[in-house]
Length: 251
Image: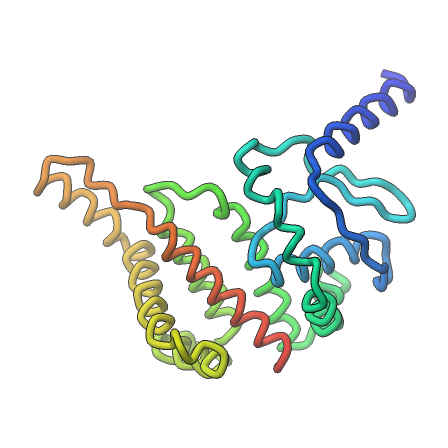
């Protein structure tokens, strides 16, 4: 395959990407390299919007980076009007406040060596938070409690201050302190949901989740598979996101 063929295929891919886009957003490049600003800007957008955006391609002053060629029809429909979230003055204010704290959040050896303890806690939390993207539109009966487990791990990474400081009571207390002033009207709901989240996590990692499936099969002669608690998981991801934002702004 010669260079002309490569260029042609790349142009075809770019056309496919463009045809599957609904909207775009333009950012000023305030980063030190051509790649860092992509990660930082996308993270700011996702923290603000509360969803993981299906990016098709990026355009910088140096090059075009193709992220996806296509997305599913249902996924595309779900993000069709999401641009409305960014069409107000709140996003620029949010972006300008958070961006200075989102610098250098890339797993690069030279950068990691320079992180202090608080930066390491925050940056690894943000990297783990972005990894939750895999659960946004794909939740399965046998693995949805794994998502609960990963959310709890992120809380423990962010809010544990020292070794053996990740007990449920302490973590819940710190989340309540961080978000208490913002969620007064739903504080009880938040606490009860977090307790349930930790219970699900403990059942999953200690094997009780799978034992209960077996017991249910024996008792009822059914599949014994639990229902996926979509709304519960959605709410827990929201609380995690708000906790991270508050931590960034006031740490």
